[in-house]
Image (cartoon, rainbow, N blue to C red; front, top):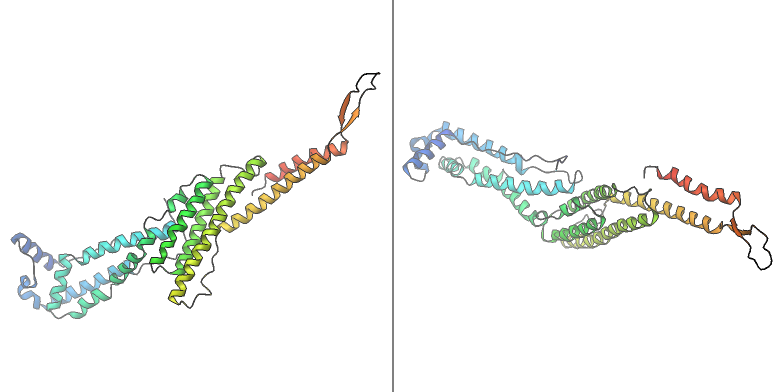
Length: 336
């Protein structure tokens, strides 16, 4: 999928000082584990210590490029929000592996031996790695196995409806996380945008103003089943979120529930379309029923014979019936 507003998560590197790399290679050749003593007098060399300290400062800045990443949940798609957290988790785990590597550990040990404690302490505190990992681990139950593809791949309205149900069932996992309520509501809005797009894709194969009225009614019924399912499921989720907020005693309880589902505009448009087509069908039916042709005799029967009967319609009545369909023909070409 070609997604807009994706957040590129950089693949960072932690360059190792040549002296540290040299000692590690020497010990590897000798089959021993490298330690500070293997540096000999160089551990007292202030120039080396300064270089190592500057190197650690660069590591911190590199790691912060990832740990300080965030995205605006009110923009883009639901898939972008989910992918962001899953990709961030993978990136942070790679950084953690580098953090625990022999090269990094040996560099920090040399700095500790040289009493450069500020560098070693700041490497653990200023990177924000521990907190970032805790956050992605906390959000993981909500982000992993998110059934969004059921919606994005749906080719029928009934499959869209069941996908909406599955998504809201999955969203209930927020209860076991610290995923922010405001962010969850923005995620719901993003899902609504995806829902609107997917309904339009499915309906794109049909021309709603052109298809027969009975088929139109069937399609509309399926669409409104989707909308009703959304309303029912969102109401349940909102109740769950309110309980979470109450337990946290969040002061923003009154302002937190402003949600603008994009599919509501589509729903309103469909309501207008259904109302128009129903009124047109009602008008056509009434005209046909009221202006039924009258039966008149065409011949005078002889005794014992039956008269020839012929339906006859007033010219104005005939015009009224004939004008209904052409009038609709003009309207149905309007982009709905």
